[in-house]
Length: 398
Image (cartoon, rainbow, N blue to C red; front, side, top):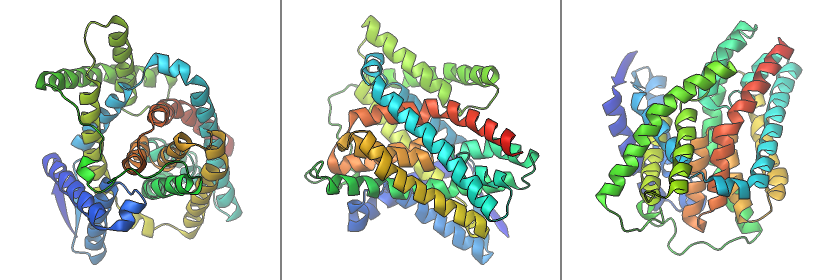
């Protein structure tokens, strides 16, 4: 089979084109607008389906250089770090702790369901961990990093299982988040649709502000500084704690420190709107590139126990989000938005969570508290607790 390799510049161009395609389709197809499906998901899956057809026909397969995809991911999460205000954290501390507690509960439940289903079907329960929090709340990065530990513990092919399950979760985390949030909003009469919302994807970011090119330059220089310094922080945390952290953790923490230092000193005006605009751009292009590169044929090759296990994980997330998370977080609009984000990072990645919330916000308006809490829990604290619980679970099941 012929392999068509795209370098990082080709991959960047493809991501841009797929985003434009997704935006055009969401404008033209009412169902996509109605269920707040993110444009990068639509465009990215279109290309992933095309690539799958090429692969299935035996004609060719298209592969990507993921260098710039990783860069945009790190840049996006760094912009998220700039949104964290310590005074706001103190104010929202109780809500953040509650969301973190619920996240720990879903980690335990995902592993219990996964290992339990595999055991009932006569398979090694370690494979269930690969379909549990390793791939679901951990995402593709954690699946690739911890998968070899499953192999070493006796679950041969554990890495393949975990990565394939993470691909499944990435898709369903994006597909389910917006529609479930919309269901909760409509059912509970939480908020009316914004006028002309979702009519024009490119106008969806409610950002009309007066700025100057110097403020964008300042914002980007801050981003570059935090990314560079943050790489050392990530390395240090990995050595200190003994397990791998995502590459964006360090830059995100440095951005939090820089933002609050600027706010405390008051020497310069923080370019919040400009950094937010750049963050939206980085998120759009990263997701388009990431979803375009999905190998959907890996899902076709899943064995029956894996499919049953993943179906159980989807049902768990749906019922937990609607019956537990939404009521405990307050049954209000913020809770519905948090639900969209929780499903995103609970089955895929924090970037999916942000895209889910962004899609809902375009139709019903923003939720500042959700935009604050989801990255804090999904992008920071979860990695600590998930890694620790996974290590303990592998030890118990080995």
